[in-house]
Length: 296
Image (cartoon, helix red, strand yellow):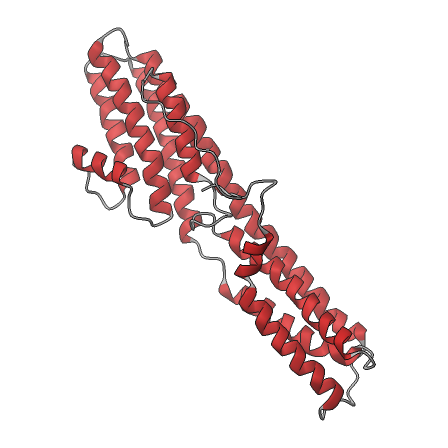
C-alpha cells in the first residue's frame, strides 16, 4: 500500500516506460506522415477526434471505478480479519479459565495459531513460498493440506470442540467462538474470490485500440505550422490515458506483492503484536518502520 507523503513518481514512470516509448515512436511517425508524407492533405475535424477521446475517458472511468472497488474490498476484508482475530482471542481469554495452566496454554496456542494463519494467508494469496516461520509451524503441527490457511482454521475448530467436550466452555460459548472462526473463513474465501477472478483482458485491449486510433487522428486535426507541438500533444494526451489505465491495472490485483497491494504482511504483524499483548507474551515484536514509499 502506498504511503501518503513518500510516493515515488519515478517508479511509476518505470512501470509505463515501454508504453511511453511505443506511443512516442508512434506519434513521431504519424506526425511526420501528417507533415511530409502522402497523408499531408488529410484533415480530420477535432470534433471527430474528440468522440474517440470521450470514449476513452468513459471506458477509463469504468475501469478505474471497478479496479478501486476490488482494491477497497480487499482492504475492508483485511480490516475485518484484524478485528475478528482480536475478537477470537478476547473470547478465548474470557471463556477459558486462564487461572488453569493447561487452559492458559490452550489460549496461547490459539493466539499463535491465529498469527500463523494471518501470515500464511497473505503468503498464499501472493503465491509466495511460505516463510521459514510458517513452514516450521506446519512441520510441528503436521499440517500438509493443499489449502494451508483453511487447514489452520480447521485446527482452531477442533481445539474449540475439544475444549467443549472437556467442559471448559458451555454450548453458547462454543457457538460464539465458532461464529468468529466462520467469519475468518468467510474473509479468506472473499480474498480467494478476488485473487482468482481475472479482470476481462478484452477491456484493456479495447482501451488501447481506441487510444491508438485517437493518437492517429489527433495530428490531422491540429495546425501543421508547429510539428514539435503537434508531436508533443500526440504523445502527451495518450500517455495520460495510459497512465490512468496502468493505475487501474495495478489496483485491480491487490494480492500481487506490488506497491499498491493490500498491506497483508504489515497487518499480520499488527495482529501479532495485538494478540501477544493480549495473552501476556514476552516476545512481542517491534513494529517495523517503512523503508520505502509503500508497505506490503
